Length: 337
Length: 290
Image 1 (tube, rainbow over the protein chains, first blue to last red):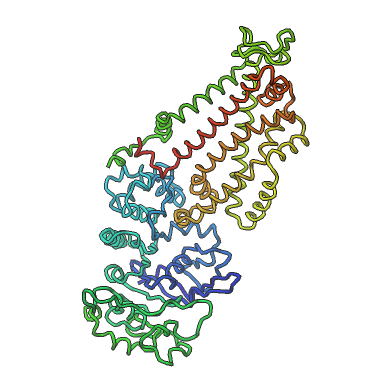
Image 2: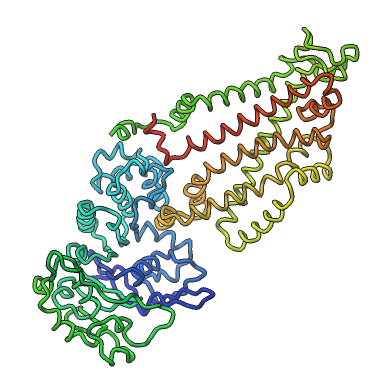
């Protein structure tokens, strides 16, 4: 498989007058053609910031970024603003979390989709309009011809998210970044949108980065997953490998926190005690150690690089065997084994 | 749903006009403004000579030749009031347009540029610390007398208000997800401002422009009343009130005619601004109400 997008040694620091915050720490990953890669982790772990960095949407003054983000042969970090604009929406499309506010309320959805096509393909208004119609059909919006004239407030949440997807895909991008595309939607609509993204991925043979905090979404949609914690990738691998052999204390904690597994109906939901550490001063050891059930004294020592657990499956955790042994009887792990 | 069924392609101006037609306040204000505009344009047809002095009929009551009577120099009060409409409307509309053009341009710049924004804001603070009418009087005395001077003198103190308003709206709009989304599809610079940021500011700007128009009409009357700017023989409502002051005990109506006209005009403009901002807000779903 060829890599569409590869990120290497991406470090990101936000600086302000109170000091620096290390938001991303040595992030490296690659995205193969036709693959759905899922970024998982709790709020503030760096999922969305990774997406913003790829799109070049970070505030230029305060964000200091190093490493490389390669789309094909070009390093996106070397591009200037004008060159980046030709990438955005054209070669990388993005779908945002909240479809209620991500569409401009003063333009019809048809116009907003047409704008992308006009901007990147130089199409005239008529061609752009017919492309917009085609896109609305593609994202399965019924009665697309009349919907072109609709303003965003006239559409439901699920419909608006479909419009966002249509906008993101109007120029046939190589990569679609979906930043929690289903968080603001109700459960039945979530399933439809995820199914749509999966189908379109195959139809258009593009790659997808799916950002989510919902392991259920990962299990049903993604090919490969990356678990992030406090700006680091703590575990990555094919979905079935990670689910069948969780090899990081944080992944294990996430799996155990899923409601409905390993708990009876009225029992308390399992949680991971504590909260994400502050990112301004970093200990060289495992950032998750203070919250980890499996942590030992060694976890606070400087951490070795991620090691292979199995084929394409890597973990930062030095206690991976202990973690797996403890969780191997969990329902999900047995189901995937 | 009815909303969807009515989503037929049509030019937005059609429904907007129909909506305005159904709102009685807007209709009345528009009618009043149209009448005044027509009077201003066709003043020579409607009224007699506003400058002709007729000392024999000083302060005479309404008569065939002068339906609102004559002032202390025997000039036709109705003719002067009709011609005075010209000054008021011209100053009001010009100031509204100048304020909008400069205010929006500077305000958008201030909202998008961090350093530029800080400088512009300090300047507007400084200008707004001085009462607008004092500033206008100062400008009017520095520059040569004339209508243009009055317009510029009134517009300059109005611009900082518009700048502040536009900047605050732009700051809000620019951080909205739909603007980030527009950037994420590659929309750039001017297109982003023109298509995604400016439309969001139009409601508040329109209202502010009508307020600027209304306050400019009052300010121009004040300047004429004080005898600054426009020369006294040009008929203006402020000048008429100043003239009527000396004969107030004998003929109080001379003060009343321009005063009432001025109040009604300002009221109409203000109401129009308020209602228009409601009508133009896309989130208030005008389609559902049609």
